[in-house]
Length: 392
Image 1 (cartoon, rainbow, N blue to C red):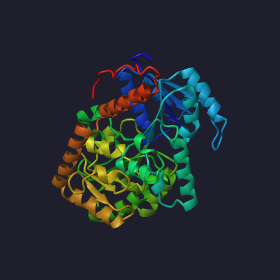
Image 2: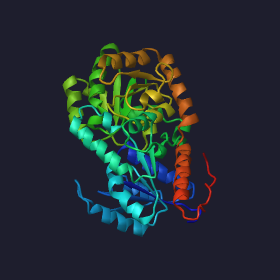
Image 3: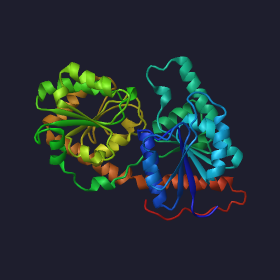
Image 4: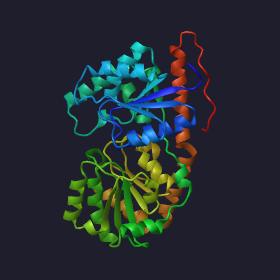
């Protein structure tokens, strides 16, 4: 093994989502740190695959069909033989289940990241929860290091005895802060949307899926409009529920003030046009969307789920509300819109926290330390190159 690390990230696909965006970010930072990076997609490449290739990663897809396919382990073994990584970084339990045995057989250490606490997902029945716990336990045996993006997830894994305590690490997510160091053209974005420059603008960024519960935001915004008739809502992101959410906006009578712009590769541009940011998810790890909203200096109103309460200090760096509490969400949004100075103070506190603690370079450096530590424990002679110096 040379000082130049060969790292393969393994995912189901590179579709739109926070996990997939983090893989792209780790690819970018890994390349900046001198790594050779590849991405192994088990099911399909996904819409972000071309971007990964632009960043210098080789993307290899196995085209695994959905469902349980034990033969996928042989395909992963062949892919690892072709890619020859020093470290395999897996990002979903199902991926670890298929890739872990192949990596172990090849002597390749595995670093796994768990991005969400699925065992606390609302509406999951006992037997499905038991099946998920079994999968985490079985897959976790193949991880040399089991990373969690929040302490909430690590505590759950330890309390349920699903992962050996000595394997657990907490690696906080980070974002690329560079795009947020320069002001955006707020007037141009608002003109593009048809939003008056002086109109209050509430926004959110995220995949339009059931777990993100943007329907709660739409319902709350309809009530916010009663207090702030000039307010607009901006929804950045795409997903399977877009049609249903647009229909809901029509039914609520807010379609003229609600703007769905789909997925955008430059969320900082749209965040810079907002006055407040809302996150209404029922399940989160450490959401990149909140970090990006903070980096843009926005006051954040977020549901108190997963690692969000560890991230946001209620009343100091943002506002928290119990998941599903529409009245509290409405009250907090109205509060920051009615008192711009208060909102600016919350946004400034969040921005300071991001630049101090949640920069992507720190996240990438933390992972590289874990990569090399895992390699050191695998190397028969213990001779592994030290961590390469780089920006932190």
